[in-house]
Image 1 (cartoon, rainbow, N blue to C red):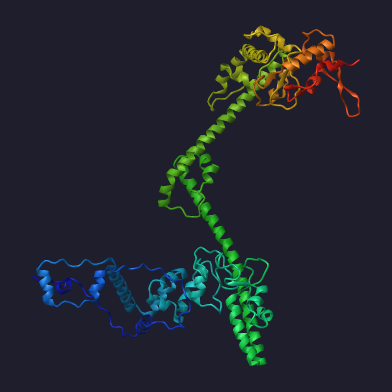
Image 2 (image 1 turned 90 degrees about the horizontal axis):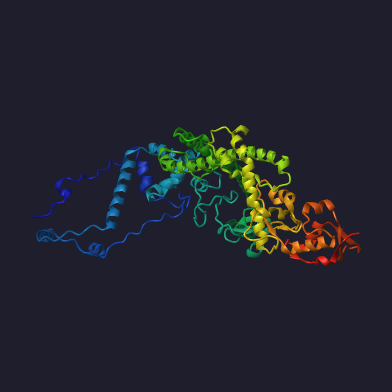
Length: 602
């Protein structure tokens, strides 16, 4: 049984090409098939990376082996020998050939004017990509005959771009404007352009000595070129090098003008030298003027681009807010700073249905967190307003005659009572006024008494723990009157100044206690046994009863002086009993002077 191919069976249609010798297609076919001359190739685009094709050894051997005759082919087929599998490289080459055949057919069928019209509607960046497709399109688009295609494509760009300068071809100008590749090493994403040298350089290529050279260093590097100072005045320069305030020249321009100037100097023709200078001055002036114009255009284009980006971002944000509100979310939560400031919202990419499906679940999580935070803040604000009402009621109660000389707990301690919490913790929708605390106000005397007893226990326990001998353990509230004694000295652990706290008046007016959100009364105070012994000796020196209260000592207003502690002028310092206690303490804990050195002033 013989092998019959699909082509022999008539199942594979052969590609038929039209006659290329038509009136409209002859020039196009010649331009596409004939290689471009060196004069026509104006631009050297960066090389395109092509995949390497790995050919198997069997294919190489098969390519050099002679073709078998029909008898051998029939013999191998009849004996059941398998056909060789096509390699991947062979398949790619055939696919490439098919694409080329289709392109040939496409250009054969279309007139040249139609091809020009199609190309002119493309963006210049698309023309650059098209020129990298294959050698046929590259040779055509890089030729001078296609200048009109590039010019028409550039003129259709919105916003408009600067015209191509005379020293640049249209493809070169398009490559500089619409790509972000380095002009030397082809590194990508290079934003800045040196418009005076028509270069886009990366940080490595922009260093002095690679492509550009600093003006004062030209004479040292090109010492063989005469009159370098005069020649530099004939060349364009920029300030985009490593030194912002210096003039940088392109090394290639210096070399070219040096060769031309050396040749003119050897001839010695004065008219040619004068014409050379005038021509270079005119060229440099035109380049510098065009460079300044392009630089201003780039600045304005960047401003316009940023404005368009802001408009796009704002439109995207408003659209997201609108969609989230349509889903039933509160506008306050949707416009929360955590949602509005998220990278999901602040983006210059327009919002599409596909992106919305991806962003919606993530945004709803952010909105839920914003809602929880808003409700928490609102709850704290409402509770604070209700606590302010309760605080005013408690302060009004403390101003009564019965509470003036007793230890008063802080309002924060009173807030913990069940009667107050029942009103304070009402839902946010409930309206709370002074009348709402009527039941809590009735229970206020009992609550204050209970809180006062707790404060007394805390202070008495501190006295027992730190060596007081006039208080017994376990602590009994009946010993609360001993807190009024002058020997019951407490010092604050949170203040550096060791001013003694003694009695109900000092406790109620202590700095920590009077703070708006200060600690509970007595929690920052600590009994000082050494200071208590010192006061006992002061009472003995003043011939007073050891059970004298602190209030009585304040009323007596005695003055004490120290034999050893003198002022700078040598005068003994007279002080009150609390000042004496404060003076002998350091940080409220250590005693420096013995009380025997203190005597009441005469």
